[in-house]
Every structure is written in structure tokens, then in C-alpha cells.
Amino acid sequence: MSELLTGDFYQFEDMLAEDERRTLHRVREFLHDKVVPIANDCWLRGEFPIDLVKEYAELGIAALAHPECPGSKPSGLLSGFLALEMAHADPSMATFFGVHTGLAMGSIAACGSQEQRERWLPAMSRMDEIGAFALTEPLGGSDVAGGMRTTARREGGTWVLDGAKRWIGNGTFADLIVVWARDVEDGQVKGFVVEKGTPGFTATKIENKMALRTVQNADITLSGCRVPESNRLANARSFRDTAQILRRTRSGVAWQAVGIMIAAYEIALRYAGEREQFGRPIASFQLVQDLLVKMLGNATACLGMVVRLAKLQDEGVFKDEHSALAKAYCTSRMREAVGWARELLAGNGIILDYDIARFVADAEAIYSYEGTREINTLIVGRAVTGHSAFV
Image 1 (tube, one colour):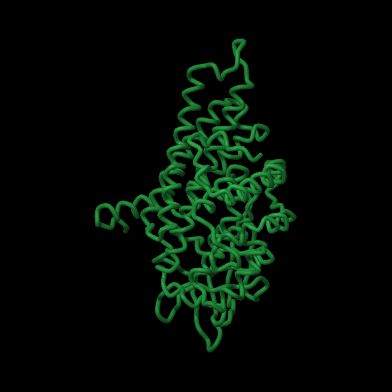
Image 2 (cartoon, rainbow, N blue to C red; image 1 turned 60 degrees about the horizontal axis):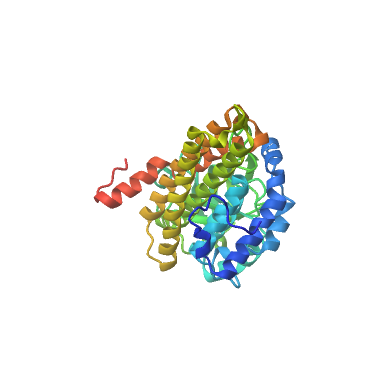
């Protein structure tokens, strides 16, 4: 499984350094051998393969997520290709990993003190402790910056958290949950690391999902949940600090979208070569080739976009609008591509046996999380016009 992905038509993977390609190929083989064979079954049952976490840890890739982790000097390109590769195998497992490394570890890396980074990141990089990120609320999504209802009240050396969070990936089993709450004293959003088992913290699995069913999303309730001042992220002073984390992770979601597009294209291409109608493979039909080329075009254009975004990230010059455009555009093209793949498979496209049904469903969640298309569009619109259209 070390060869280039069929859907990487312009061979962008060749831009990786040789050691980075070795890392990527090692991850690709693991995903092919361990994740792909169980992906449909886990998705159908809505259960997370917790036993795989140890094997993920042995890959050593969580430590690549942040420079603060020992031995970590990853390029944005490698980080992006790892996100692509995971989504190409299973969007649910890509989401699990993105929440742990991008959102949870990212919050601690960006907003924690040196002591806090040293306290939590090594264990998280070994995946001895798994992280979650609690921002979205039951009554607040796109307006969470100004409408956050979860509160934090200081009592001496302790903070008391009250409120509720929703759609929290990894929330049912995470060891460390980064909770964002509004300080009742100054009205600013601050970050807190709540440790598993803390009194007043409860997490309940959200059932009956149609997308990312393997991901353990939780409803979280905070009722007089007391955390020490030492667990308040020292450099998270307002929602602007939260936004810098989302800037990075939104680019990761764009990479995930490309991985899903490439998977959809490859599933459709393989099926077209095997399925016969009128005495010949449907791959020989003009309209089928049209669908395949449209899928490939979407994936190739979006891969070029995120490769450039990774370079901007490495140069330290990428902005909110850069990641917002990539997230909005790539997830929109992804939605088209999985739909075309499903169309090509016709009736077989709606059952799990042929895989594409899972990607079609999961794409809906990828399209929506980390900022909707509309919100990301307005971020870009504000940047290019100089006028804010937010309510």
C-alpha cells in the first residue's frame, strides 16, 4: 500500500520529503490493514474501536501534531496528508484523531503555559490520555463567540463551571476535555481543562446519528463543576484565542474533505471497471467517464489549494480567511463528488457493502462542522471587502 493514491492525479505526494513519505506510507498501511476492514461494521453499530488507540499510539503520529511535543518538527504538508489519509480510510477515525490532536492538543499548545504544556502534551502525544474539545452548545453553534451560555465563576483558587455543551467528539471517553466558558466577571471566553471523573461533569452519548456514527459525540453537562486555577489555560483570554485554534483545524478539515473525495473517486472508478451493462464495463460509457473526471477534477483542484495552504502555514503567514476559504470550498466540492460517486453506483450506492454510502453520509458532518459554509464564506467576505456581514 505504499504506492501513490490513484486519486492523487498530479502526484502532490511527491512534494513530501523522503522521511515524511515513509511516515505517510506507514500510516497508510496501518489504515488499510486495521481500519478499513472494520470501518463499516463500527459505523453500523455506532461503536468506537477503542482497542485500536494503542496501535494508533505506536505509529507515533500524535507527537507530530505540535512542535511542543518531544521530537516533533512536522511540516504542514505532512500533517495535511496524514489528515487526508485518515479520511480516505474512514472519516470517523479522521475526526477522532483531529479532535485529539488538532483541537484538544492544539488548545493546550497554543493557549497553555509552559508548565501546562509539559504537564499534558507528552501523555497526549503518546495517546496515554485522549483529549476532547467542548465549544459548541445545545442552543449555540455559529453564534457561540457572542452567545456562549456556559459560565465560569472564580472562587479563590477554584473555577466553577456551569452549562452544557453538545456534539463533543471523543466526549464519552476522553481523559482531558478542553471546555470553553464565559467568565462572569469580565465577560471574556476562557479555556479550562476538565479531567475525566471531575464531580459535576457528565457526558452522554448522542444516539441516532446518520453521519460519523463511529465518533462518540457527547452531550456534556457542567453542574457546579470545580476545576483548579492551574487547569485554566493561561493564555486563553478571549474568543480570539479560541479562533486561532480553529484557524489551524479548519485547514485540517479541508484536507479531510480531499481525502473523502479521493476515496469516493477511487470507489467509483473501481466499480465502473467491474460493473457491466449491455455487455461491456460501464467505464466505457461517456456519461460514466464524465462523472469520474468531474470527481477527479474536484479532488485535484482542492488538493492543490490545501497544499498551498500548508505552505502558507509553514511560513507563518496564513490567516483566518485562508483556512476559511479552503474549508468552505473543499467541503462543497466534496459534497458534489460523493454525490456523483453514489450516482455512478446507482442502487448499490445506498448500501454499506460498496462503502460509498458511508462516505456520502459522513460528508454531511464534515460539511457542517468547524464552521458552516455560510460562516466561513462570511469570514472570507469580510477579508476581501473590508466589511463585516455578520449579524
